[in-house]
Image (tube, one colour):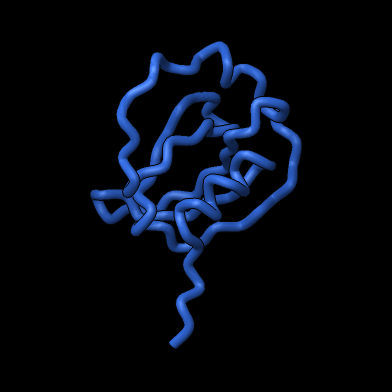
Length: 90
């Protein structure tokens, strides 16, 4: 069987380039889809809300949710689908 999941590094790299769609399973077993990015050119308000820094949890990725206009996170192991949208932020 081929593992089609993306690595954490690959997902972070794509999120830094563009907007991506991530479908993942939340801790309460609910399925959520989110359009998100880490690209400050697409979502310049990221810089204005950037925190003071906290330790990095390698099992979680924190992203800017384009639709909610806020920071959200998801567990790498919970990702069901990761698509590169290439859209501009709204």
